[in-house]
Picture 1 (cartoon, rainbow, N blue to C red):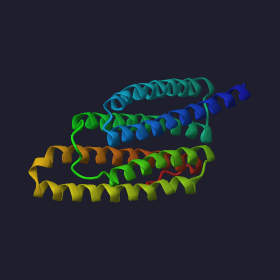
Picture 2 (tube, rainbow, N blue to C red):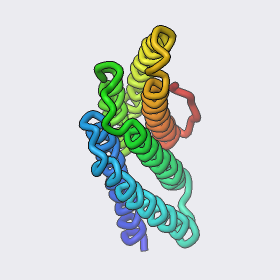
Picture 3 (cartoon, helix red, strand yellow):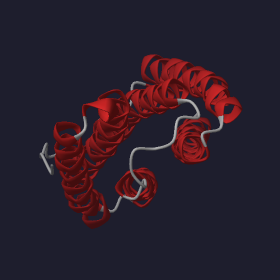
Length: 216
């Protein structure tokens, strides 16, 4: 029975990493759709999000079954609790990628009001944060989990830079207001993705140490 339980817990971890990999991919694809103003790719984001939602349900069901049948204690219970929390954060990241795709569709093929520099930087940082948070989970690495918060500060700084620049541009030229707001929304969605990655980092610290901390 113990061997079966250990295998089930291992499979849960593998499914979480699979879900996280899909989330990294959907962030990347939403950015590519935006930069290339590729409407077909933007629409494909919805299909990717459906698969993320399916995985969330699968993992949640398996977690609840494991709790009910095996009654895990202490560290194992914290691991399962962390997985349950992490899949919620990952699902929300997928939703934010869908929101980016929606803004991409709204902008359409209209020329960008400015070269997109900081938004791609935010997206790459957010994607790396997801990878780092999940790596910290698998390795049970508290120091690595704390690094996610440092990256989140960089994302916040980039968003503030985007906000200030676009606001100044809107003041100078009211004709760009609509697209500038769309771009601000995209920056905000990326900033939220980074926050969710930070949440996972916090849960990893709790999983390993049993202590609840705020690293953001």
